[in-house]
Length: 251
Image 1 (tube, rainbow, N blue to C red):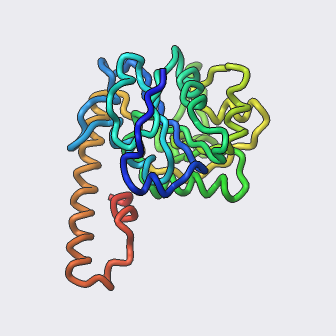
Image 2: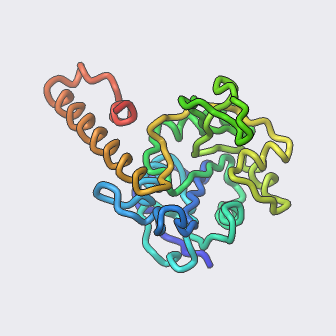
Image 3: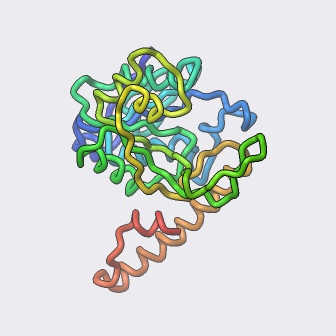
């Protein structure tokens, strides 16, 4: 079942249908102990923050548990019920994206700290000719296989969302109904080249209550940085060269 909402803000109306984001928030939160995407975070909820940043740069389909599909989510153009697996949920969202979409992003509803700057970087990677693009960050910890063999961490990266795709590439990746832990893996299996784009270390996924507390700290730091930026603008507009998104993304 699909719930269609009118655009929530004027910026959405000016974006058009070229770029859509599927925010995947259909999980039960088994490891967290509750549906983490609906947990309070700052003045809002985890899912609201994830959708808010996506709606600043694209149209948005939100995929939620079936029993939450009638819930109002600010910034969502369409709300659909998810499937059994993550890939099933992405396909449910993909079915709601109009055929004339050119770029489709897939974002975890449990990643509330992504910035619009990161979203724009992913969109630009596709506009510049990429078929598929993922944000990545370096790994600080030493890595070992379960059999004890050490891995060279310089050879691996941690993959985040939003992941961006040419619309036809993402549709082809999901055409045979396969499952994977992310969409870039399916796109690669379907023959697409996946581009690596610098991600953001603050763009963490909420998996445990500790992650939620860490996200609260990041939001608090961003609020302080934003207040300082506004104060600087008030004092002397010519001295504030950074945008608000630059400031909030560098807390």
